[in-house]
Amino acid sequence: MSAGSVAWGISRYEPGTDAEEWLRRSPRSGRPTTRSLDLSLARRLADHLTTLPFATWNFGDSVAFEGLVESSRRTGDERWASFVRGWGRAWATRSRPFVRLDATAPGAALVDVARRYDDHLLTGALRDLADYLLSRPFLNGIFELWESAPLIPPYGEAVTTEFDEALLAHPPACVCVDSLHFDPPFLVALGCHVGEHAYVAAGVDQAAAFVRALQRPDGLFDHFFLEGVEGTFGPGWGRGQGWALLGLLDVLARHPDGPHAPALAALRQGAAAGIGAMVALQREDGHWPVVVTEAGSGDEYSTTAFMITAFARAAELGVVPADTVADALHRATGALAESFDAAGALTSVSAAVYTSTVASHYANVPRGFVVPWGQGPALLAVWEILKSGES
Image 1 (cartoon, rainbow, N blue to C red):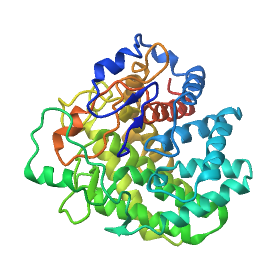
Image 2: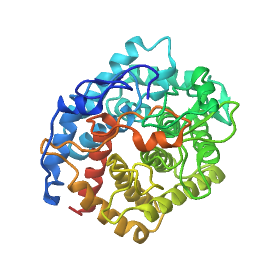
Image 3: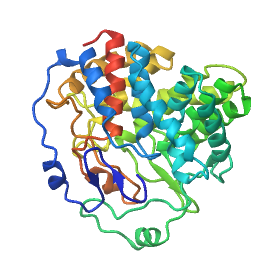
Image 4: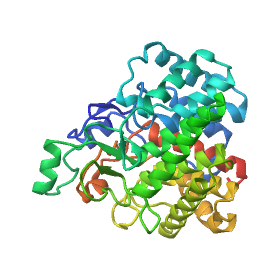
């Protein structure tokens, strides 16, 4: 979702590139059975993630790095956590001056490896990053993500209005729901690691502010809002629900109680409402459409992977009763099992969405990409499935 070009796994993809031509560079076919959701697949997914060309930093890295750290935690194999530490160490050597894309750093995962290896250099760099992030201006109580929103002309054949064109010409500052997976979990994780209450408080407050600003009455989250522009944009974006729910649940898992009871209660309510909405919108085949409120908007399987982890974690944390998500988890697990190709990569994952004020944009983002924000959620989902024994 960078304003410039983005690395897409095997080659580079930019808005306007022909998606079918890109896909011909990496043809994939074949589907495994449910029996393939096993430790071997988890290891293959983790190994494959390390071959993707990450950037320091960009959107989508956080969930992939968390999957790698989780893989080392579950298996005792240090290769994947060491890979994450290597990226963190390399970033730490050149991190100053910080830039806005550093807001997309996989902060919570880096805190986990800094603690795992007692890495004082990395911890120091993360403290400096947190201080930088806390210095940004507020928009509706949330730290500003972009000084100029990465608005792009809408995918598909939508006709833009004068309103859309004016914003494209002069994009204002913005906040995106993706950041609910970046800032709050990072600040809470770092605060708990170094014993700084101010970081924890900021993380909890930020998460609560996201709920107030971007969650709709039906429980779903919109994608973004713009400074000085009324309303929010990107309703029903499937993967956006994943960023929001995993961000909220990570904060709750890392800081389940303490002096922030009202804010934590709001996070639990927000997560429960989001999960209830997604359970109700799940298709019979176990997946969700690209735009979860639009049945005909097509397939996008990263949402399914995100929801498996979100539902399982919410039940484990007591955010929702286990029986309210049991059937949805079962169907999503079966759907995920049939959504990998012969090489073990999750299919039908969309390109980066960027931002658009045109609602139809979200149903028309090209799909079929092997990227961190698809393979990372898949890896986390497989670990949750193995943990539950449902495979």
